[in-house]
Amino acid sequence: MESRISGTTGLLALIGSPVGHSGSPAMYNYSFQKLGLDYAYVAFDVKEDKVKDAIQAMKTFHMRGCNVTMPDKVEVVKYMDELSPAAQIIGAVNTIVNDDGKLTGHMTDGEGFVKNLKAHGIDVKGKKVTVAGGGGAATAIQVQCALDGAKAISIFNRKDAFFERTLQTAEKIKKACPDCDVNVYDIDDIAKMTEEIKSSDIFANATIVGMKPLDDQSVVKDTSAFRPGLVVADAVYNPTETKLLREAKEAGCTCVGGKGMLLWQGVAAFKLYTGQDMPVEEVREKFF
Ligand code: NAD
Figure 1 (tube, rainbow, N blue to C red):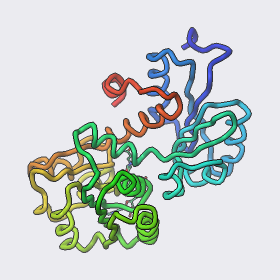
Figure 2 (cartoon, rainbow, N blue to C red):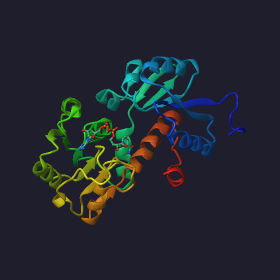
Figure 3 (cartoon, rainbow, N blue to C red):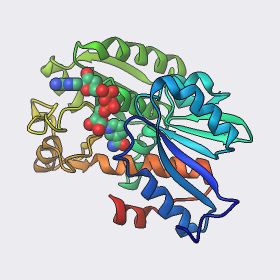
Figure 4 (tube, helix red, strand yellow):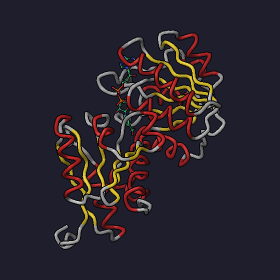
C-alpha cells in the first residue's frame, strides 16, 4: 500500500454507521492495485446527522465517489444533483459518483441481484418474479427487475411497518414500468404465496428470515411450489446456504445465494467509479 499511494491518489470511501465490519475497503483496494488504478478506498463512520458534512467533504477532497450504507442511504438523496432511474424510484442511494463536483446517486443493490442471476445464466426479462420482503434489499430487487423487463412482480410482506412502503413501491413501479404487472399480498396468506410461486419463474427472499437469529426459518412455509426449473434466490448471505435454499435445492430448483448479489453490486459500483470491470473471479475467490 505504501508504495502505491502518492500525491495524486484519488480517494473513495464507504460512509454509514457502523462500517468497521465492511469488506468493501479490502475488495476495492485489491481491485485498484490489480488494475493499476491510482485510487484508495477507506471507510468513514458517518451517522445521519453528519451526512451533509460528509457530502461537503467529498466535494472538498475531490473524492471520486462514495458507497453509502445504513443509516445514510435515504439521507444522502437530498444532496444529489442527479439520480439514476433506480435511485429515483427507490428514493435511496448506495453509490455516489463525483464528476468534478456534480454528484450522481445510484442504487446498485438491485443491479447486483440481476447481474448475479445473469452470472448464473438467468435473465429476468419477460419473467414473473415473486419477492418476499418490502425493506431496502427487496425494494431494490423489485425496482431493478421491473426496469430490466420483468413481466410481473408479486410482492409478499408482513403487515408490519414495511407493508405501507411495499404498497408505495408497487405504485411507483407501475408508473415507471406500465408493462409490468405488480401486486402486493400479505405474507401470511400461505395459499396465495404458493399459487404465485407456482406461476413464477423466479422466487426471491429479501426479508431477514434465514439470517441469524432467524436462521432456522424459511419464508416459504409451503414448499409444494418448488420444482425443477424454478429459480430460488436469497438476498441473505450469512449463512451462505439458508434453510430456504437448502429446501429449494432438495426439490431440484436452481438456487442462487446472496453473496453473489453482494459481489455484483460492488462490481456495478466499481464500473461507475472507474469505467473498468472489477476482476470478479479473483475478488470472489479472495473475499467471498
Ligand atoms: P430491512 O430491515 O430493510 O427489511 C426487512 C424485511 O424483512 C421487511 O420486509 C420486513 O417486513 C421483513 N421481516 C422482518 N421480520 C420478518 C419475519 N419474521 N417474517 C417475514 N418477514 C420479516 O432489511 P434489508 O436491508 O432489506 O435486508 C434484508 C436482508 O437482505 C438481510 O438479510 C440483509 O443482510 C440482506 N441484504 C443482502 C444484500 C446483498 O447484497 N446480498 C444487500 C442488502 C441486504
